[in-house]
Image (tube, rainbow, N blue to C red; front, top):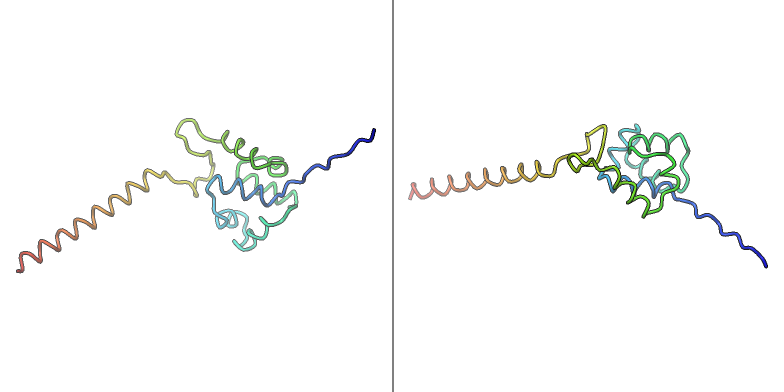
Length: 133
């Protein structure tokens, strides 16, 4: 009876980073700026299967995940892990540097206010044209 060894599948570090980054809604430009590199350099980093521990530590710190998570995460594990980071108080992802998060309701209100203002300007123009006739 022979025993077969099943090779451990290696996690693609770059893909793990991209999954977490996408789920958190963080752009490459934001992470690249935090790491003092260009967006293009960060894009190449996300394509690498193996990334040095020092760089993984920096990225993990910015994303608020453990380095081990980036080294070993599968897609399903990533989803479960990210879901544990929601802040129960307001339903937003926990982030320490909130430069890349926003409240979608605020954006909707802002857009609505701009639309109302544009409509008011149109009405004023139409009223002015009617008076001139």
